[in-house]
Image 1: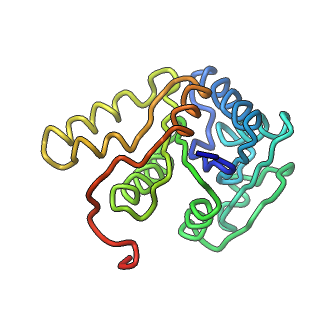
Image 2: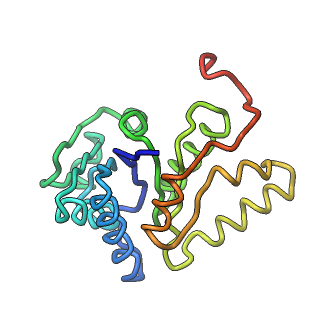
Image 3: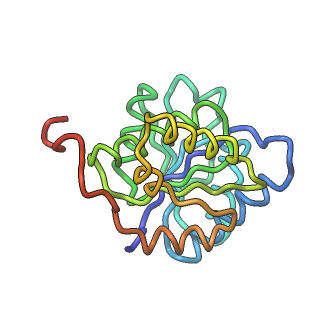
Length: 195
């Protein structure tokens, strides 16, 4: 599967471990080397800024989407190939999804988790069939993955839905998995035309 544009969800903060930023830069370099454009939230700070800087420094394309209300707080990245200013968080997320062939989550906070869970849910429902990757830097997402297994054991998540989430700590290994991805579900909950 060709991944010409990948949506990356991650924090506008750098986190407490310097290896988070190092991993974000490695992800950006790996994407640019494969010709995958970055689609992300548009900030120049934290993990978001690190992955964008790495893509741009490697000669890749970076597209930011930033709500006007966050423009002063997240300070849009000045070097992007495209920076779209939108009216709301809902418009931001919709445009990020629309412009992407795949999704990757890296360390971040509530916003990152919310965006990740949304694209997993949409895949589970059959709204899209695109690969979803989790770059598990320094085991950051281990508690989240444990929770998902608990949700399966508790009967709130089907085991096959875990196969929608591709996990690796290495950017290139994760991209390999995403390029080889085939949507695994044989049953979906609703027709895309109903949504």
